[in-house]
Amino acid sequence: MKFSAIASGLYLEGLGIGREEVWFSDAVRGGVHRLLPGGTLRTWLPERRWIGSLLLNQDGAVLCSGPGGIVWFQPSTGVAGALLDKIDGQAIGGVNEMVPDGRGGIYFATLDITSMAQKQPRRPSALYRLASGGRVTQLADDLQFPNGMGVSPDGRRLYHNDTRVGTYSFDIRQDGSLGERTLLFEKTDGDGLAIDTQGNIWVTGFLSGDILCLQPDGTVVKRVALPGEGATNVRFGGEDGRDLYVTTVPRDIVEAFRNGIPPSSPRSVLHLARSDVPGLTLAQTNFRLTRRARQ
Image: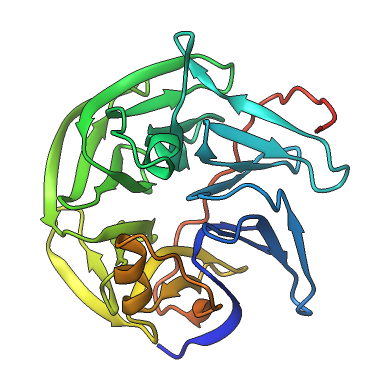
């Protein structure tokens, strides 16, 4: 594939693909950024850092993961609020990845970003479903570092990366709950994840110079070489589903970051390429958001 750089930042990660616009986050610098076809760039929530996932709601709002749970903002008005900041009355330390459940709600996994940022022991991570009506159900626990998620084209399997372990598969039951999980592929730097129309799972790694493409049984179909040394996320888009967006990071930045040295120069890049296989465009969520002015 031929990749073209279309944006840059300190540590790009979250991706959301609209009809024409591309949304992306900078986990270190902060903010959610919208890139239009002509190159116009605008930023919302500039102070919010560690956003690992972005989703689009049917009313035009953007959902953002990060410290304290899931927040949202409406680009057309600037109104914002919290979608989920507590589970069973307990404050959430953070949410990393989210994916639509195909029924208006989402699957998401907690990650205690607040404690990690304060260099304190983090609380255990777990996988949940948030229904469009607001009900939260825990589906799995015993997760080390939950990351990228995707749902199969037929809606019968949920895939997710557990960084430092590999890519897992869950059967999705008729009621939206999950069956037993199966480890498809061992990978110790798994990060973002996307699904193509053939049901293949595209997995990025923050230390990997390629995207790993897996069949639903874990068999490697191909490896797509990248211009960067590592990749944090991947998404499909475009009218035909063949636009491929990837956020890359240099390996030395990742290693320094893991040693407590944050990046200071914009060497993380958002790339665009054309895939020979169309991908699945993520469904929009359908939450009725409480509109209150953001302080």
